[in-house]
Amino acid sequence: MTNAGESRGTALNEALFARLMAPLGPYETAPVLAVGVSGGRDSLALTLLADRWARARGGHVIAFTVDHALRPESAAEAAQVGHWLAGRGIPHTTLTWEGPKPATGLQAAARQARHDLLAAACRARGILHLCLAHHREDQAETVALRLEGGSGADGLAGMAAARALADVRLLRPLLPVSRADLGATCRAFGQPWIDDPSNLMTRYARGRLRREGLARPVDDLLAQAADAGRARAALETAVAVAVAHHVMLAPEGYAVVAADALARLPRPVASRMLAGLAAALGGQPYAPASAAVGRLLAALPGLWTTDGGSLALTLAGCQARRLAGAGGRRLLLLLRQAGRMAPPVTVSGGGARWDGRFQAVGAAGAGLTLGALGTVDARRLAASDGVAFARLPKPVWPTLPAFRRGETLVAVPHLDWAVEPLRPPPALPGRGETWPRLAFRPLSPVAPSPFLPTVEAGLDVMAVVSDAGVII
Image: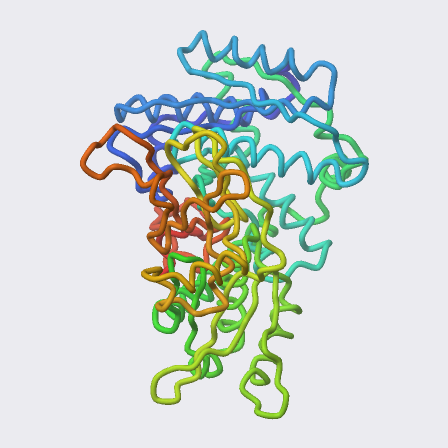
């Protein structure tokens, strides 16, 4: 633990932190914030500032520490964080990364595990906002590393001040704030902190960068990030407009695109739109590489050739097929690639996420699983009377989510079908068996919200990425 040897900095006051939070909303009337807190000065400063901000608005903060179990002392450090926060009346929970750790790519795997654990904890508690303590120097390091790695404009925009995932919104209100100011904030609260030695380990790229120093001034790197962020925001605005005008996104997890309109769009807009659709419909957390998207765009006209053109093209677990439209319109059907769907998952009391696309929430009977309907059961149901397949493109049928007990199909919610003995009694709420609610909730949004947050002068926040709820 240390408080010494640092530039003194200037502590953040309540008014400045409120200005940092304002453009990242909206928030509930009584906001509940989760904060990822490691025990370092940055995350502890954020936790204390967020707690004061939330309490002033009738809300509260819940702190989560992820113990990666990579150092012998990590469990004791997490317990110390819990002790400190308990003294301030802030609820705290330790989330442990269990299981074997990878031999290579450990830092990336640990970062992903941290995000997964934090998102799951927020989902289980119904928390909408997760605050992370990335700050000014973190942003500059991110841009420097992406420059070194040859990133394009998206990467050089750095970390977004707000980004919505399927389960929670990630908020980074401290991106304009220096590390020294966060240390001063902790001192103003009388809060000690823990320095993690792994942050300076030369086996990791960021650790080497911190030891060696940045090759360019922080201000230059952040100015480059701001320029790239504005370019990214302009492109995302155009993509959102294109999605709204030319895409029909179905709750069954597929999309129909006006192919002729797609061909007329500027290449960067068409590429970004296809990438977002492929990731969302293919159950992927990130958009595919631009080179792969470019190959798909180049190959799409072949779907309409009469001399042996492809029946389907694939990208990131998504397939593209031609679809007949009224009046000779060319329509592009985008849907999940059936052979790459995830195996069934057990639906517990807290629900389940399946295939990176569908979320089941609510009560479930014993032994219920959620998985793909599949070709065999789709054909069997299609041959039955009264099953509402006709409104869906036939390739979509096997990709629909379905509930089973053992090998027995018991419900296909999007077809409004269930085996008769297991239908919930409609006139007896609270009695009998009920089905979990099922919704299309992709891991990544098809398109961002077409706006930058409204900011006050002097506050440099980056582009906001909205959640899947505002796709169109």
